[in-house]
Length: 217
Image (cartoon, rainbow, N blue to C red):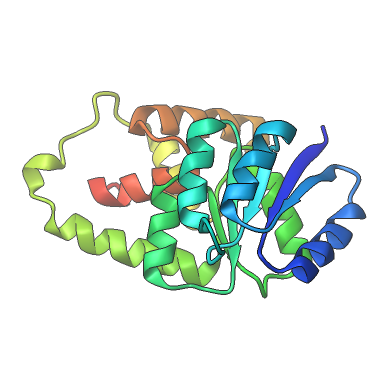
């Protein structure tokens, strides 16, 4: 399957460099470029990308607002924020509005390519420094939530699902989890689907956050 990617950044040179970088991978096709969030929405409705690489600070319409509008218009589209800014406000706003990943522009090219593939598979991707901030913030929030709100799930997670949830919270991919637990990758995928359903969340990042909130990790 070819992954259709839309590049959104206000720096033309950066977009062109990204397209050149991604063009050498047969399973990735850059189907469009946009210089701001508004242009991204217009192009995305036409080209129907699988994954969008979205900058944060842009003129006319920023990346956070654009992500929110894009997810409403194209729910199946996966947005990865790719930016130079790791401010807490940007990180949390982007994840709350539907981004499945948050990477900094100094990310290694191989890691970026794998992040695109992971996003297309429905997985979430966070820069290690970003993941640490997210976990710290939600751990703080969970301590402020009254215990009465930490009720048990209607359909509790099994021991294996809790084990896999812990690996998800550490940022491991399905393949890495499968290798560590000595089970098939397809089995991990099935467990992840069950975990998302039981927690009532849409992706792996939200699953990790919800697990912290409920005190499961």
